[in-house]
Length: 128
Image (tube, rainbow, N blue to C red; front, side, top):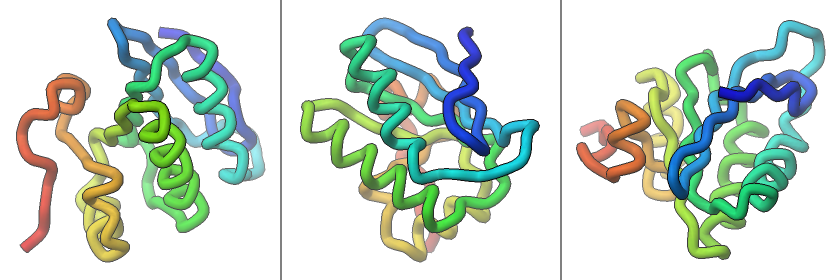
């Protein structure tokens, strides 16, 4: 696993598998948050690896802020425009509910694990 100090406010742990890139977001140890360049940085990493299938692992993200969600939507549009896939995994129940309220669970599907996300198995969580 590679670690990259990618964006102010976030550290990214990168891992690659056959035809997939896995990115775990971690709050940075330094001050400042700038979610506005997160989509650009991750997109750049995807282009460099010629891989357009992405799993964002979000178990270390306490609360999805609106600007971070907007970056995920932007990234999803870019990935899909290149015939790729973007899937989330390990969202907290609170963050899952937040995506549901925003009606984004179809655009940003969440899975329990990395392997479920890759296989597209186990229907993403959907509140009743």
